[in-house]
Length: 245
Image 1: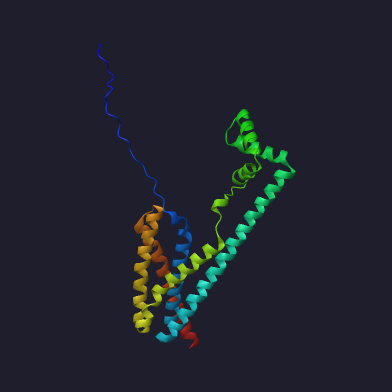
Image 2: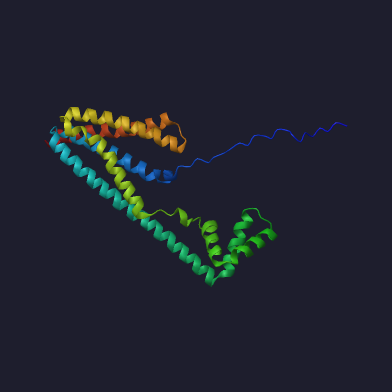
C-alpha cells in the first residue's frame, strides 16, 4: 500500500512577525498637547494683538512674553498635576500594604471576589488566592492591579512630563512668531497663518501615523481648530481696538 505520508513534504514556510512599537509614543500626549497649545495659543494671541495693534515690534515683544509665560505655566501646571496624581497613587498603595498587614482575611476575600467575577470556579479561585497571598509583595501587587487598577510601571514622572510639555509648547510657539521678525504686521500675520497651517497639518498626519488613524482627518482637525481660534481672536482684537483706542 502506498504510503500517503511524504517525509520530504515541504514544510509550511515560517511567517516572521515583528511587533512594531514606538518607544516614545507613550509621551505623544505631552508632545501633541504642548506643541498644539503653544502654536494655537500663540497664533491666536498674535491674531488678536494684530487686530488691535499694527506695530510689528510691539507685537513681537508681546509674543515673546506670551511664549515664555505660557511655557512656564504649562511646565508648572503639568508638574503639579502629575505630582499630585502620583502622590495619590502612592498613598493608595501604602493603604493597600497596611490592609494586607492588618486585615489579611478581608483582603483574601476581596481577591476571591475579583477572581470569581473573572469566571474562575471555586477550586481555581482558592488556588490563585493561595498562590498570590503566599508572597506579600505579589499579594500587594495583585491588589493594586486587580482591585485599584494601578500599575506602578505606568506612573508618569512629574519632571519628565513637565519638561517635555514645556519644551513642546516653546517649539510650537516659535512657528507663528518667526514671520513677525522679518515682515510688517499684516504680512507677518498672513505668513504666520500659512506656516501654522502647514505645520499643524503635517503634525496631524504624523500623529495619525503613530495612532493608526486617518491622516487627512487628523491634519484637518488640528488645522481647523487652530484657524477658528485665530479668526475669533483677530476679530476680538479688532473689537477691543475700536472701543478702547
